[in-house]
Image (cartoon, rainbow, N blue to C red; front, side):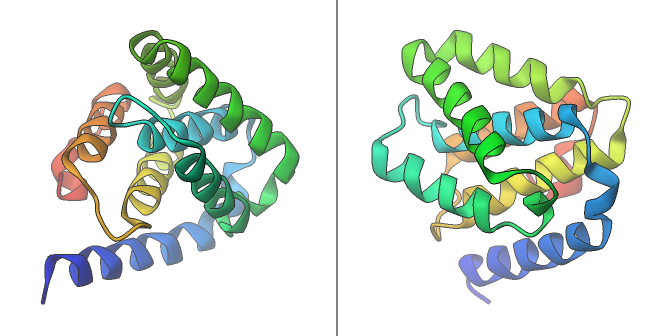
Length: 151
C-alpha cells in the first residue's frame, strides 16, 4: 500500500475516533491549542501563503470534531496564530507550542490536538518533513511520545 494510502487510512481512523469524543473537548484551551496546531502545520516551512491559509481554514470549519465551537471564533484564533507566525516565525512558534502545552495535564485533549495536526498535515496529500517536525514538537510539549503517532 503506497505511503499516501496508509496516511489517508490513518487520518480517517483518527478522525473517526475523535468524532466519538468531541463533546469532551469543549474548552477554551482545547480550541486555542487546536488553532495553534493548525497554524503551525500550515506555516511549518516558515511561511504561510494565502492559499494554504484558506485551505486550512476551510478544513477547520468542516471538521466535525471542531463543530462544537463557533466557526468565527475558530477562524479568529487561527488567523491570530497565523499572523504571529508570519510576522516572526520563531516567536510565533514558541507561542503556539505554549498554547498546545497547556493540555499536558489533559492527555485525551492533547492527543486530539496532535491528531488534528496529522489530519491537517495530510489533507493535501503530502505530510512533509517540516509538518512532521512541528507535530513532533507538539507531542514533546504535551509529553506524548511521537512514536505513538508513527512520527
